[in-house]
Amino acid sequence: MPIRRAFYLTTGSAFLALIALIVGLTLSSVLQLQMLGAQISTVVEHHNRKIDLITQTQAAAYVRTNRLLRMALTDDPFERDQYFLEFNRAGFLVGSGRNALRDLGFTPDEQRSFDAQTQLVNGIQSVQERVVDLLSADRHAEARRLLVQEAVPIQQAFNEQLAGMRALYQRANQHAQQQAQTIYRRTLLLTLVFGVAAIVLAGLIARKTLRKVSENASQIQQQMTELEASRAALHEEATHDPLTGLANRRLFYDRLQQAIRHATRYGGKVGILYVDLDRFKDINDQHGHHMGDTVLVEVAQQLLACVRESDSVARLGGDEFIVLLAGVQGRQDCIAAALKIQASLSSHHRFSDLQLDIEASIGQALYPDDGSDEDTLVRAADAAMYRIKSGCESERQTPLPFAPDPADPAQPGQVQPGQVSHA
Image (cartoon, rainbow, N blue to C red; front, side, top):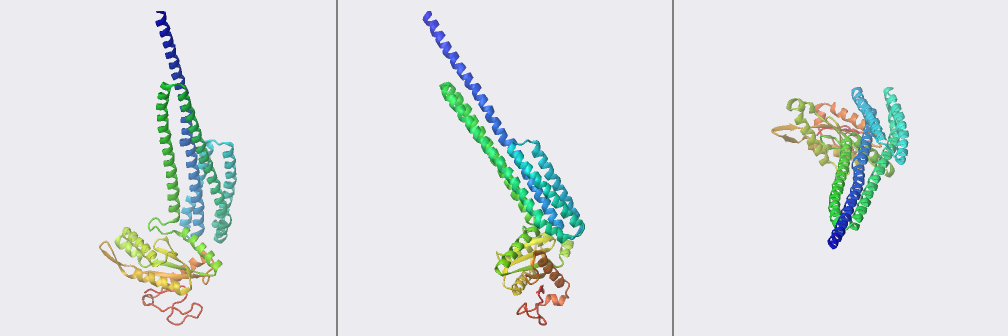
């Protein structure tokens, strides 16, 4: 009896000790896992919410500057009013995004970065208000100059500040993940110390924890991928025509500016072809806008096929296209390209069960002969196109020979600079 009692006492004490160890291990593991869950929650919810707000603010700030630029470029008062409404709405989104970000709370480093952004935002608003005032006073040239010299650079600085904050939160995510890994290793070590039974229990907890970490890591990666895809989609929408996939006016002006800089530095020339489809309204009226869209897509593909890979094709809107010819030797190259486009477009095309003739009026301009900047060149090509479109039918249908030299006086029956007749 005393031996059995001693055995029971010893076994019971060991069992109680084992239970106490398992309970201690369980409590310790639960505590550690709660800390781990809090770190994961910070990564998935808090930091990613801040990254979402920064991305929203950056996109809205970009749209605000873009609409201001469009206001400066357009001459249509109704179109300018529409851009002004979008400009104000983007400003509201910038303010609401920054307010929501501030409500989430900041660390001292984040607060310093946010304060620096506030100064930039105040500067951006001041410059943009000055641009709007100039546009309201019909001082478009001064407004464009202010946009290029002050508004765009300070907007770029603001974007860099936002990118810095995004990088700060990404580093915070990495730090939180490292802390989660440290907590996990500590939990595993305690599990090994508390015995075989505790090891089995800790192994199950560790397996569940690893699965949870993997799920949350996948969730974080998925969110980052979605954010990157959203950013890429915003950039594509801001720089390309949604119907044809061609570059839009803003991207074309950027490329033209780069081509002019390159030509200025190395002494080359740059050509522009302004393409306007003839009787396109008749196609829309007779066959519907869906057929008109089909024609525009086909014209875009033919324009791309008619130029070199180094050239650029853009859609300005409606049935107006523009072609950038980089590195041309002179006006003859522009005219040759225009005639090639006309020959391609004037051939018969079948759309569904319809046979449609596509023709275009093409005006051309040459840098530096017809202008020294983007706006002047585009206006020169546009004016040349309208001279072509307003010519008589016989002139538009008769191909004219090239002028032997753009510098020589134009001879009778030769193409004038800036004009290309229909073939």
